[in-house]
Length: 243
Image 1: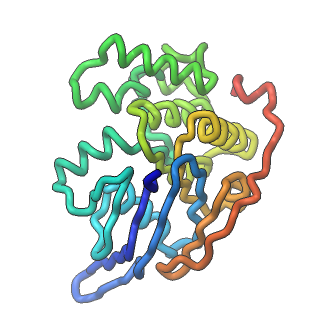
Image 2: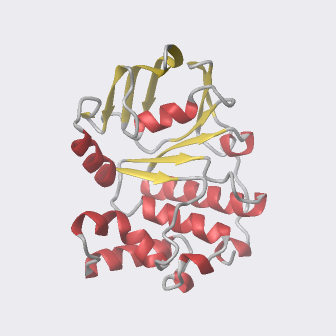
């Protein structure tokens, strides 16, 4: 089976006038189907830049990227945007929901935006995903009426809308308290196990990393270590579906 992600020799140098800053220095990164991987590193280590490159939001200065068997580093801007929409899912620290849209409309958005309309099939898929993440009773609520934990679960459902091969999460629990953060982590692990969804989670939080099956640490733009995570389990609580 092909790797979901195979990135080789990724380098990234930013120019500010005459000053060059080398952020990534020949990083290799491979993810297999169904992995839940934490990408760790201190501020300035290059982890957010690497996540943006894998997500086709930045073009690397050097290196190659293959996602689900397709070489993507040479795609045009339009092709990159289409690939991102159809085959990658994104979960951000601050969820970036559309405030005037309902939970269902927010989840359907990745499929509806290119088509210009929310079809019956899209709405059904979105509502199934919201039920999957424990928000059956919040489907028609506007985003402004949801709690922080609920908003992040909507964001997870939205990331899964187009059945992506790879889900990229950038500090997905960074804006949540520990209880809500654990609920979101429980949900991501559950989806990872039951649907074999592949996750790459960028974090500085050791608690998050401990819940993953593998951890990759960056330092000064290079891979410092690759280790198996402890994959700590927590007991789900009643509040997991109520927060």
